[in-house]
Image (cartoon, helix red, strand yellow):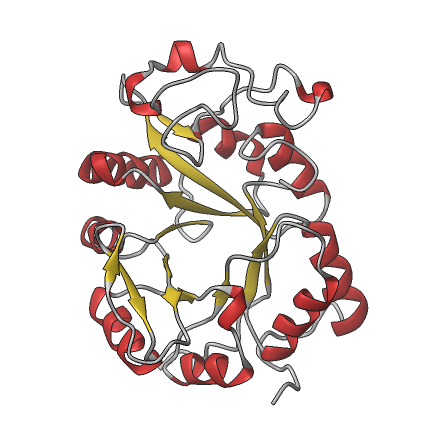
Length: 280
């Protein structure tokens, strides 16, 4: 069984340094690297002409000056949209990047977590993403995550060597377990979650920040899985970050990677190992 506490701590910039720059843009990713993020996290979808672009929503409405579904717009048209002004006038002209453009700014030391959002084009986007990771020789540097477990099963079928992170919905409400968003399960029992993760062969378990406790982390670690947290508040919440580290998590996605960098280095030491928090 793997030692889940024995890996470097993951400071994962959520859609780049999205607390400071427009999310999922090259400016957000470049700033995250400057701020010391160990990994970038991005969301991917397919355009009408089947190119992989980096955008969270299924439409361009919220984060650009355009309207419409990403899947119905060609890449050339998407590139004409302003993906920065919604965040601040100084970012006017930022574009929706392609996955290849994100690869180009990563560098050799930065990891990448690619969240596949496009379940409607599941097989095609998974196949393309896996192919691009292999072509860029990013095995071991780039991993794939999803709330859609069928995506992760498909990744492992095509490329067992690519690390997969299962994004989990956990509830503390007893007796609640159902499926939502098609193939996204909701769990209240950690033992059942672990059993299902083992079945699909995923590598990392990612619970939401609001349910993380030292007991939860220990239970997942005991099964051999690292714990990477998602769903931190959009505002700067230093105490929440400290609490999650104290629980022993192996990393988290965060909009402010500089905050996590400073807390981790200043309070836990640059050589600290994940999973050694003193929370009880």
